[in-house]
Image (cartoon, rainbow, N blue to C red):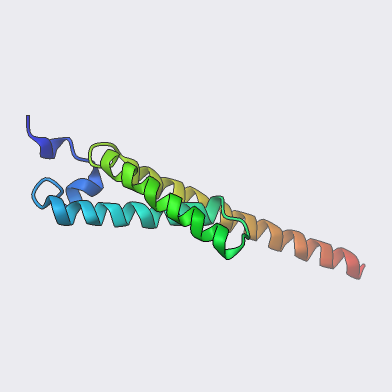
Length: 110
């Protein structure tokens, strides 16, 4: 059985089977960046600097495990989908608040 057939999209893109050192580092960095994006879009709150640093340290440590899973499972791909959904949600929320604000301001003028 050929291992390259079982790789996830990003693992195959970074050629983890041919260049394991470079490929794993690129997959790890991709997983970290996507995890930070998903965290910032969906879960981040205003925290003190020390608390934020602690959260990012644990996020990076967790991404180490996710990277090993991401070689054969679609971890990074799932993070891309989650980021896209959260981006769409944020855009719709901003549009909704803008419409609501303009409706409230027009009611105040009457």
